[in-house]
Length: 280
Image (cartoon, rainbow, N blue to C red; front, side):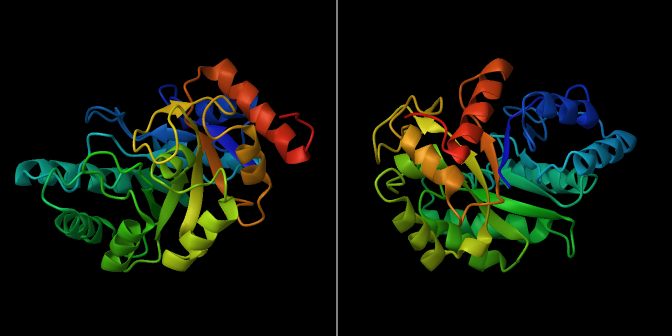
């Protein structure tokens, strides 16, 4: 089954967000666990979470892909800032337990000149401390475009984090804009990129995708998202992705520059691509 969704606001509660997703033609969605550029989080509502899970089950939804705050940098150079980031991670994972069985995705962080090895060690330390045994949440590292001092711009860096933490409930979310901007040519050789991912990390660790076209050319290390089919990836790339047998069943989340009507159009378009009906 093709699980498609987009980023949605949960201001009205999770149950209402499930309804919004279904109205858009989605059968999954992503949401920010807190203000994406701050630290404030909405109060927990366990009855609402239970109602949302019931609706998701009734509608045959795929797994949700929560997103940590952009300001949560686990490998910043200042210890007090790292401590703050660790507290956000620990709180997010605790709160995610109210929606068991879903994914928590985050940007690994930026080492801000400390060096990738130091950054990776700090990320591993934070994850090891935050991920309680038998926690009902799978944590995902997002593939990054490699701009500045970002950690996670290569499969090798993500592998180092996975190995350093040593948990099977830690995986990867592949962002199509990020990997293309980061030098992985999913336009010219999607199969080759997936083979490299499998060789370095293992496809069993790939749990979700962010579907974004890119405003920039290959290997630009810029990370600027574009609407599906309107950027350098092009429509044919997304046709290949939604029909690829190795990606079947993974939640695919749109993060394109859109409002809700635009997301509805893109979800419908991607479903047409799956059926082979859309001209490119």
